[in-house]
Length: 161
Image 1: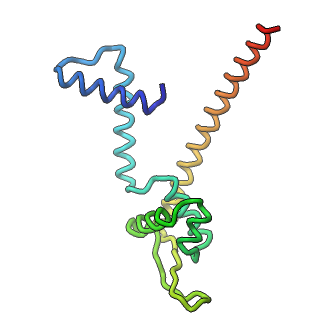
Image 2: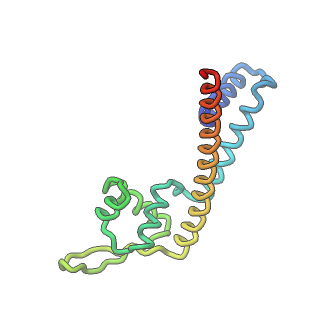
């Protein structure tokens, strides 16, 4: 059972227990710890602001590298829709992490340059650390799964011989 499934089970258990006025059985207490952990992480993310998704991080990273990207170019580069690019940019501007500046491009049309603010640069650095940590955890989980599958296959090969 995955972390999210255990959290949902813990939430349902708490709702059932509190509805009937009982206490949580000892065997289910680890689920309560998971639920508390999720609650604490949610509080932490709220205190850090509403922007914590990988899409926002990728937009920040792309705009830092090339501030003159149009929303369409940004969407193509990141493999997202133009609407999602627009949504992410607006959220970053509202958070004060990006500023939009007007300029004229070569076709004599008005365009924008999206510049990261000092707080946007700090936030991107924090997000980079968090996403790197997340990716390392994913890598370790994959390594464990590969080792388990390899061991399982090795065990079946010796049994079939």
